[in-house]
Length: 200
Image (cartoon, rainbow, N blue to C red; front, top):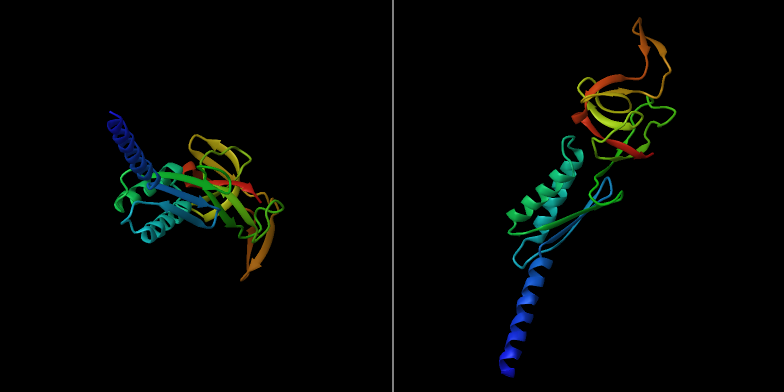
């Protein structure tokens, strides 16, 4: 009887050991600081960890630069990559310099249209989100002007009015023609918003 109990205990320990290792070996931890991505994986033997980590890093960089992507797309994409590498039940955690399940991006100001708030060349930390309010400084992809960093002046449904902080108007003669030079104002769709400035 004692022998059967000892064998049962040994069997439970072996099963628990393999179950623990199974769950431990399917973890993926991703850290994003706004410019860089680091990945650590704990995988089962036989998984090409180097290739897996490289592909996850490439995908995370792609998501940071894609206006339509979000944290859900990032996690699902990483899970799909893990499955392609043979991980059956990957557990993906995303952490960043601004908290868990956030995607920070660092952008640099180009021009003087956001003076005095933002200087030309200044680095700005953006939280990749479409959750915006009037008064927020956002980065957007404008059909008319390309990539811009502007202040939200108004939100009308899915349309967002963006304006420059620099209200100065200048005039300049170029090749005999008089040009008015002032900050940009434009409407964009909320899907074209890349994120909200949280540190500058």
